[in-house]
Length: 262
Image (tube, rainbow, N blue to C red; front, top):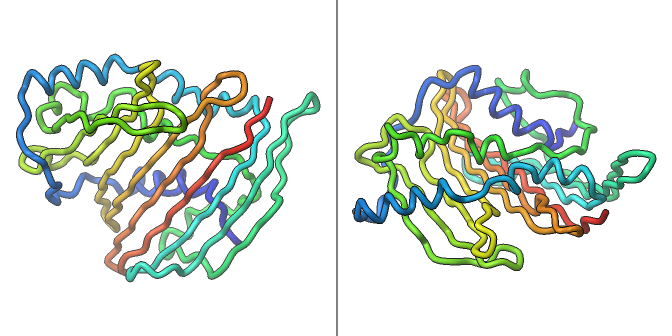
């Protein structure tokens, strides 16, 4: 049976809960020292940014009809594509309720989860999206914990365009000389200049388990929809799993949400 991306995020975090014991000590590049006063001002700014819109975005999505493009891929240890599944899902909301229909689907190859296959749900027909926010926007992120702040560097990285809005980029990196044992290695916050809202997040983390090593990246971008509410636009999740039994393999899931209408 083909496996949709709806189960993948909970699956990987199930692995972490079962086997996670710490963080890898691999050095992460660091661009150099920064003045303490500048770093303090950036930290203060990060704490002032509103997270309300991004936290509520998946809940707001429930009020809209929309189209979702979804693709999940698996790669082997040489980074060759060995399996994929792709769907286009139309979600409609009316007085009668909410309905979803797969309007296009394609697939190829066979997903192979090895030892972790026993944790894969067979209920793959639910096209509802997985809310990435709890994994990207923690209530108390480790890099803002007072005991860890000095183990990270904080930098303003200039501006970029997110949807139709100018966004400031704040980058947080684990210091290779101080951050051993911390799972979060890199984060980028994208902040709307006009509203001071967090509109996108990128995160890298590394986790070590008894039976595997996982290197994961997450990205989520929200956008304004009809009625002015902020809803998901694009999400990406990639994980590289290394085990002593079968080498490395990578799984990537991408979702794009379009045509939001009330």
